[in-house]
Image 1 (tube, rainbow, N blue to C red):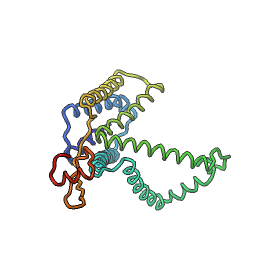
Image 2 (tube, rainbow, N blue to C red):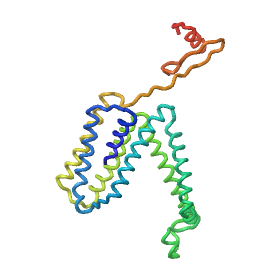
Image 3 (cartoon, helix red, strand yellow):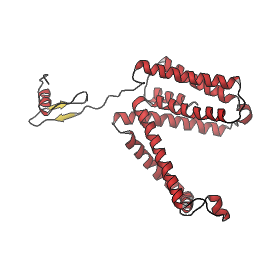
Length: 260
């Protein structure tokens, strides 16, 4: 639930972003709602270990760094979200395969994919319920849908910022928790209701704030100047990208003629 906090902190400290008081209030309200909702079961089901808490904090710091750097890189170098995710996942897959091969998991996984049945059926020599083609199809479908979801997340990050994407992801996870709480038999207390109310109130406030600004919190970056060399001498700066010029208009612009 504190992912949005780390995303905001990393953006402010490392990328020199500036957020308004309303943004800080919305994030605090969202985190407070989730903490209140989860606090009810903390004394019965939660187990706190220093090592686990340290690893969780490190993972949240890395998540905040990746989200903010992804936003900056995609906007600064004009990289599409699909290309960015493809290259990022390709590098990650390469190193994961090396680690899996070193531990022997890659060999076991390939063996599982090339034989029918589940792991339990293969270990106990039971009749297989899964075919090889069925397992490959399921794995491919899972990978495609996962890439599509990551692409949508990267598109939100590029267009509206890392903080908006972090809020969206937190809202998705919170909705899953709320639905599981509603669909399965659980004891509902006033603290649960209060946590849900605070969380929904923060989302409504974020939506109203984004609609009033009209841009949804979009961040703008200054791109390097793009200069076109013209035949016959001269050059033209077309880095603004606000209009399209014909070759004759570009030549006039390079010669100092404003009538373009």
